Length: 85
Image (tube, rainbow, N blue to C red):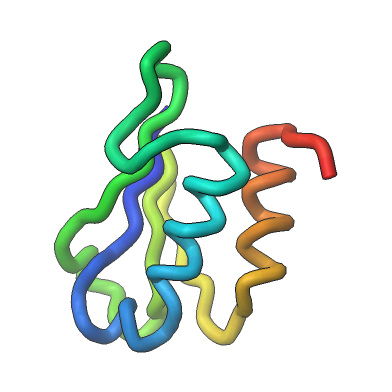
């Protein structure tokens, strides 16, 4: 399952780096994938939804996370990928 975080200026200012960091940490993968290919985390260019920044695409689903902080992203990863606390 791949997760791509928008890396353009509006999303970066609004915390897309924190989203990517949370995904990498709690999935236990390096940027752009792990050895078994189960998870992939990376950056993509503008998704065209700057008003909802920061943006993330997971598989074929995109969503904005406006106003959320690091702890939300950690919880998001836990729920999304069924990870332990």
